[in-house]
Image (cartoon, rainbow, N blue to C red; front, side, top):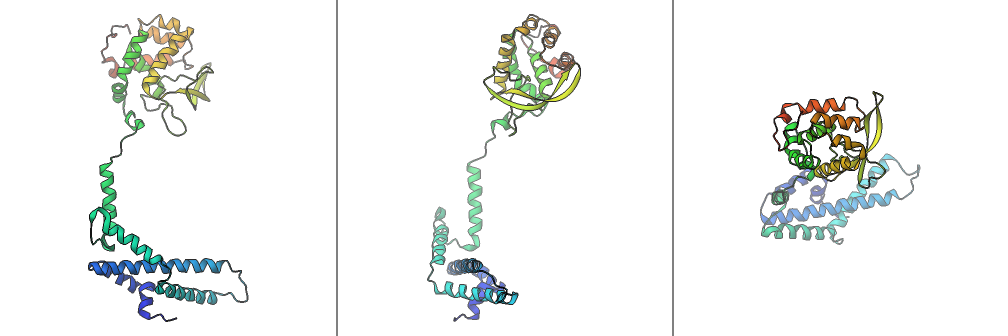
Length: 308
């Protein structure tokens, strides 16, 4: 094999790498030469990997295999790879030069773009694409509730509509949903982290045909709390949750007595607990306590004349 030291240096040591960097920073002709050298170097590395794979398929023998043998075989493979690549018969390097050369010459009409600024050009294209196509917030992100004030602002119009259909004070619905969800911070989620939008803790009975989510919840049995698995209804939006709550109360005979006491906030809330809406013995007292907080008491509504 006829391989000169200068040829081997370009592909085998750090001096060769320094030469490539210098060419890449030079003129247009130097850039093209550097591109060809890099393509040839890649082709050489590919050949080395191919030869190594071929040797790995040959069974080893303790008689002829040793560290020295492996070392010299590696050097021999390097020389063969370099020689085959320099002959230019494989065509891989030419394909690389053609592809990269066309990209650097044709993209956005930029001419003379070489290896030195090819990476920067790609980064600029990516940044430009991100600016042209801003990432929009998902519905989950837009509906995320950050605070009690945010909870009220986002749900107040829907609470008013639901309250109008039931004939109750809209603030009662906000207070009840605030208790059930921790002011929107603990809305039930599925395993994928998606919100169920269930604001009133309504469980999924056998007759429910909609979406569901099963989670661990706290239940009370004769005043004693225990954790259990329970399946709850799931909705596509908070608006659906309010609508289903209205239907849930209207269609369940056991809540009719509570609906007859809508003229009194306290009477309606205690009526829900008496009908078995929740197992927590302090359920009604907690809702009434939330209802008395400043955030809700300051709200005014057409039904604000209801007695507390």
